[in-house]
Length: 281
Image 1: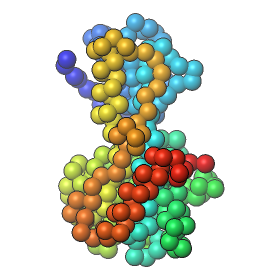
Image 2 (image 1 turned 90 degrees about the horizontal axis):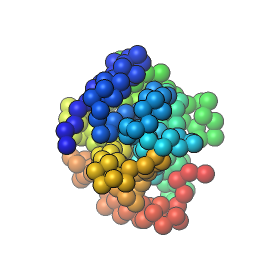
Image 3 (image 1 turned 45 degrees about the vertical axis):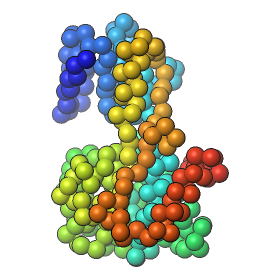
């Protein structure tokens, strides 16, 4: 099986790129991202004999020839928030998003709840700057997924407010934040989606961990369904339990994370899996 990809540079490319793959009669067309929700649905409904899958989107009602891939990233982000709360030296950590859309705010929610759970367990008062689970209107957003200068600006502002660990949920915007944190030399960054230690090696020295959205797991599931003839519309969910989400190793900073905190983290993960700890209301 051969794989091909196209990258959209603007909204107008969504329909055009989907149509190019439709013309090639691909066995499975995978679109990536919340902003392709409508374009993918239109393409699938116009071509009911073709198979589509979309990352970060599910449809209700189900579209018979689209398999949505969604991720319970709040579980993994909860673990990252717990670690951040255990590692901060200033008592303040931060997060911001690209846009106030569900696939972004689920990270921010989970992260914040993880910090609050650490506070509950330890009697601490670590503060989260940039997100308020009780008032989303107070959230901090870059209004971009690609403006690294904006990421740098927000990073400097958050550090000036006292945050020494920042989790940007804004795609490449977060690399601007990572640059600011590295320049300041007194904090850490938490990556999202992929392991930033590996994908952004320029910042490996400050990447504490990353909240992983293991799209390879869910995309492979979709591909297997096409190959074995079981493909149908609906939703596949990446979770902590099936390895669809998780947090990355601490890599070079492993020695900085206390053994006690690592042990607590394993217990928190076990408690999330058992349902003893809730990562959402």
